[in-house]
Length: 102
Image (cartoon, rainbow, N blue to C red; front, top):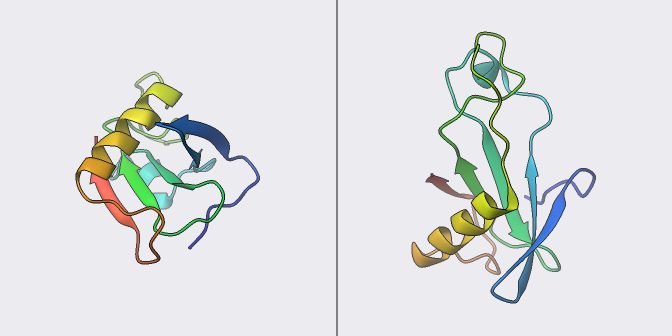
């Protein structure tokens, strides 16, 4: 599965280009604060396996959270990419999504 290009952002980590995106609207479970905010990462040019990263914070669009929103920054994304690569994520190989928690 490939990321939607609209709304995705580019980042370069260790000389490799990636695209990443936070879902604009929360899922129903995220809106109820049952699941945290997630973001997805894939290779910019020839996407293969997608990385799905769960943060520790609620989605800014959640209905029940009074906590101030915590943004996903490029620093967080680059840290997640490096950790996922160390854990065996293969962004160039096709396959199901690789899930990880921050």
